Structure formats: C-alpha cells, structure tokens
Image (tube, rainbow, N blue to C red):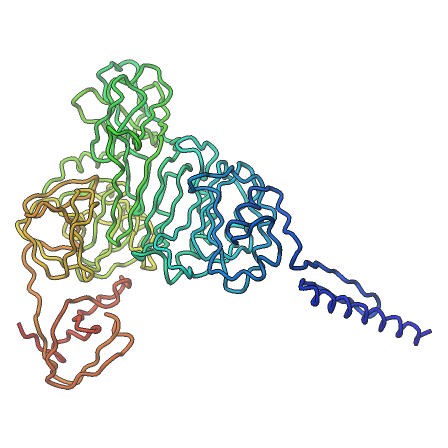
Length: 620
C-alpha cells in the first residue's frame, strides 16, 4: 500500500508539471503551489496572451486600450509585451472628455507591465468608487485622481502605489488629489484627511526629477483645506489649492444692540499658508448689499452686512474678469502657494464674549474705529503701537533671532521650561519663527507665542514662547525703505514685475548692489521696489541694507582643499600654498544646525574653501 501511495503522488506531481509546461507553451502565466506530502493543493491563475482583461466599467477599458495603443479589447498579451515608455491613462483633460469612471476593477492588470514600466494617471472617478485597485500600481508619470466625497476614505491604496522615475522627463509632473466640484465639495478632503496621504506625497518628494524647475508640483483643488503648512515638509513645492469649500470653526460675533448698516465687521482669516502664516485671497463677499470688502493686512473688513444673516461668505471670484487672477504667494525657499476658497464664517448675533472667557471669535467695530479679536490679549494694543524697522511683529508675521535665545513652554521664562536653545547664527542662517500670538510674563515682559519654521532643522514645528525684546528678535522683513541693498543669499534672488513676486523679470547674484526707490507691503511681508520698476523680497536673510563688501580674490597661506559643500564635505581638489583664487560668493557651514555657529566659507569655481584667516588671505 505504501508503494501504491508513493506512485499516486508521483503521478500527481507529474500532472502538475505537465500543466505548467502547457501553460508556458500557450504563452500564458501560471502560478502553482504544492502543499505537504499528505495532501497536494494546486492554485492556478492562468492567462494566455489572447485572454481579455475584464473591466467592470467599459470606460476604463477604453482608457487602458488608448494608453496601450490597442484597437479593441485589451488582452494580457498587450500588457505583458508592451514596448512603449509610459502608458497614459486619461479620461479628463482631453478635447472630448469621457464619463467619470464608475469602477476601477481591471486596473490591477497593469501591475503586470514589463519591469520598470509605469503609467501616467489622469482619472476622474464617480463619487464612492473604490480606490483599492490603485494598490501596487506602478506610476512613472503624473498621478492625478479627481473625485468628490473623498473625506474619511481608506487611503491605503493611494499610499501603496509604486512611484518610479519618469522616463519622459515631463516638465510638469505632479501629484494631484482633487475634487471635481469647485467651491462646493461638501464632503471633500479635510486637513486631517490629507495628513493620511503623507506616504503618497513623500514618494513623489523623493524623486530625483520632479519638474523642470525642481519643485514638487502638488495640486489639491476643490477640497476643504484650511491649513497648508502640512505640505512644507516635502521641500520646495508648487502648491495649487483653488476652489476650496471652507466652513470655518470660529464664529463672528455681532452685537445686535449696536449694529447698524454702517457697522464694519472684521474677519481675521482662519486660513494658514505654508509657513503657518495667515493667508487671505478673497476679493468678494456674498453677505452685504455692495458685495465688496476691504483688506487690513489679512483681515477682511465688511460693511453693510445683511441683518440676521447666519453666515458671512467671502470668495476670490477667480473666473470673474473684473478681478485679477490669483497671485501665488512666494516663500524664501522658492515654494509657492496659489489658493482660494468659498469661506463660510458663522455669525452669532450676540455681544462679543469677554476676553477672559477664552473665546476665539471676532468682534465688530463702528465705521472708522479699530476692532480687536477676542482671542487677543491686552498685549495686542502694544502691537498696534509698534513702529519703525524693529517694531513689535504682527500676528502671523515672521521674526528671527539676532542673538542666542531659548524657546520656552510658558511666558514666565524659567530654566525648567526651556525647550530649545538657538545659538547666535550668521545672518543668512538665523532661526525664524511665525508669531501666532502674544503673552506677558508676571513681570510685564512681552512674549511672542511662536512656531519654529526652520524646516530643515530638527526643531521644525516646535511651538512655545520667545522674547519680543528687539535686542534679541526682530521682524524678518524690513519695515522701512533703504537707498541701497545688497543680495546676500548664496543662491541670489529674483526680481519680479508684480509686488506679489510673480512675473519674473531677472535674477541677481549674491553680492549685487541694487538701488531702491520704495518699500511696498504685501500681506504680512514687504518688498523693495527697485529703480527699474521691478520688485524684490525685503527678507533680511536674503538682502542687506547698504553695500556689502565682498572679497574679489583670496591667496592661500598654506595647502588647502576645495569641497563640494559649505559644510566642507566631499573633497574635490587640493590647492598649494600661494594659489590665487577668485571668490564667487560666500556661505556658512551647517546652515540647518541651529545649535552651532556656522563658519564662513568662500565659494570658488567648483566648490567651497575655508575662509579662516590662518589659511587664506583676502585680496580686494
């Protein structure tokens, strides 16, 4: 009997081998698994070249066929033997847009493309369509998924796509997770939802090639986002977030006892930019007769509000020819944010709660008077009085430290409350903070409540209190005009035709001296207007008032080395004593380490060398 059972098992194994051989001859693919010697189980998923891929939605079948340049039904052979660089799946953005896709079933078949081949995706999905078939999909081009009602979904599949480098070098490759309905996608992605997509955005941020200008292009249009600082962690980004549906949490209080049609209602913005700063791009209001508003910084001032209205709604009117297109907000690292939304401010027709109540709502003011947020402490009256080039910084603006400081947990500065020590830094490396509020110590000293926005430092994102003493912290942006400025940023700066820093005019290298004819305010930043009519940043880390003398040449006093970076890493070349080198610029080492003072380096042709006077002599 034992011999009989052994013979039976040999016959079964032989049959299994024949099955695999037949599958191979037929041009198909078979997966087979053998169990223990007690029992044999065979699981097969066999397809031949001519087998058709089953798509639940015919529209998706047509999209895949077009991508593979196939006439008729898509077969597994079409996928296995694809000879192109990159199939492009598109049902939007064409002259004859197709219907929204109602099922992604069948998309999984593209995981069997030849090794190294990925797809570009530009798909519009019907509400509720499962995202699961995206899991494991190889993507080597842009990835665009547009769908309403994505709030609260399981995003595991999107995070599990396999992102590859783009073989085509498409200049505007992007990752795009948008809604379809502008300004009204009531169940769109929230700030919390987007944070769950971090693995998806991280994959794209790690690519060697992102776009033609090196920025990661991220589009999250037609959702419900109000805080865009989440995207700063992905490096230099070009972030497009128009058409947001923004129902804001903090109410507007209007006292019915004092309300008239001349009452001016102040709406402090509740939208945050890449640096966590307040952002407001609205130009139009629904809730008053004139439908107009005026801006005070990033606060919208509205007069003639309809009595007993439950909402004050403001929007940009992006498509209206009577209003300009939205200007992007430009950041010091080259990132930009273009955003607008339909903003719904809930209205409470009652007296503004007392400041001690901790309410976060806003108040109203009669025409011509100054209103004040009920979140504001009494110190905000000090802010209003701040003046000059080193005045108290406004809420939402950026300050930097000019001397060593600590970040504290509480406004009464004690040793046990210290969180971080920031060492004094060279001007271009000074630590920056966004001012989010104010407080006073028990002894009456003003403090800034801040967020650390040194994005490449290990301290990035920390919050706490720092001194508001102008001997230690000052606004990053100049507040007064200067006759001349010198470009000090190692990467130089660009000049623009518009005060919003859009419409690039030219680029100035480090060390260039520019003539200034004016200072212009833009939101909570400032710009210098140059004698040629263009605008440049007034950021103190990028430009310095007056003329900065830069060495022309240096002579080596002893043997020195040239390095790839200002941290003196990546040794490239050795220079003998008495070598004369032309200085092209300067930088400081360890720019992202705020615990140590970075040493000065000179940039020469090909890299960086020490500026230590023991080793080099300046020749002007």
